[in-house]
Picture 1 (cartoon, rainbow, N blue to C red):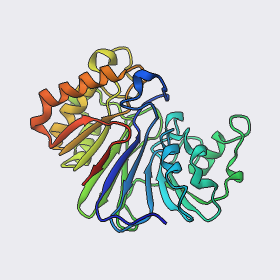
Picture 2 (picture 1 turned 90 degrees about the vertical axis):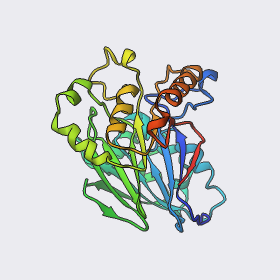
Picture 3 (picture 1 turned 60 degrees about the vertical axis):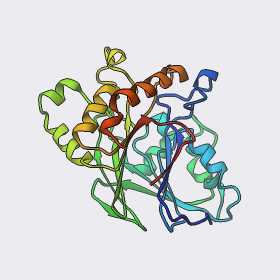
Length: 287
């Protein structure tokens, strides 16, 4: 079993959007797709958000453990959020236990969706070949209490049913929103969805939010399900978010591009947040 911790921590194992990229110009901020680990104080359970390619490195860290248990909350089944799942080594240990959570999709619940992806047509390993004790949960949006934390969600503005997960741990609120399109005109028009979203974000200690585009690159990509970082910053300020981490970086955004944006965030917006920065693979936050 993993060592118990006395502090909440968040580790970014994957912060890239759309597709992994192993180019040398992507190594500082990271080329793995979305995966975040949250450590709960006094708990040895793995709490994992999304299973993009970043989950492989997380799984490799568990090799010394003889028994691993945890929950994986998948926001939605687009490839970049599930493509690391079959490379997560702990699911092949017969003593290990995991619950896999995902919102209902048009084609079925959590197990049906993963079964559809893991067929021999697309991948040599099927769900039936996985040794760990897995339970598949089609997650409902209502708050559910777990061991030391609660999880609820509202749906993102994305191209399939996509969860914006809110995790509450002993008075600390973490919101994970890697795929969500904030539409500037709809926000200005006061669309009801954005009033609900602002309320959902209100006062969050940590907001991890999709900012794949700039306003300039967002042109021509309306309806693709991703946000311009400028709109994310304004919306987070309006919702009085304390710490903002922008994620789901575009695969064509180089380390130089992202470093320049990080510096701009610090210069222009640091006074409005305790922390504002781009999520970087390998970074650990202690709360």
